[in-house]
Image (cartoon, rainbow, N blue to C red; front, side):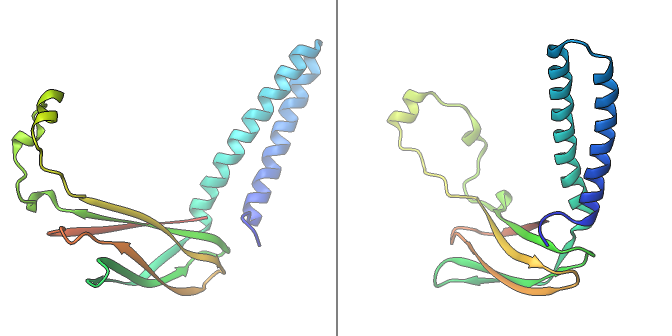
Length: 180
């Protein structure tokens, strides 16, 4: 099955009937072609906007997945972090795609050389003449598709690799799962 569930289809049909009734009542009283086109166009745009927002809203509550047994392993050979685990569809409907957004943040409290004078604005002339220290990357953010075509109740293992800077002192890793 594709993106839409039976709940999506029922809601879109009900919404179409409601807007069809409103359109019929509104267009029954209009007499000029210009007002008919304007009324029908605005009703269609409003229907389309509400339908798209409703599909995202229904997805939030019908397509659910969880990640379990998540493990973070740092691989020194290629300066990366391996994230592995199991994704499980806990909802009653099929999931087309699940995206894992991973963010690795270096803790600023442990960075060396973080002084208040770094935040003082300097002129462009001073910046041009002086050799300023180059700052290291403090955040790495990547997105991965970890599950496609997950049936209801199905669990599937996954493994992804994230870039990991050797300059990170005390990183924190956060992840967010979105399914549709």
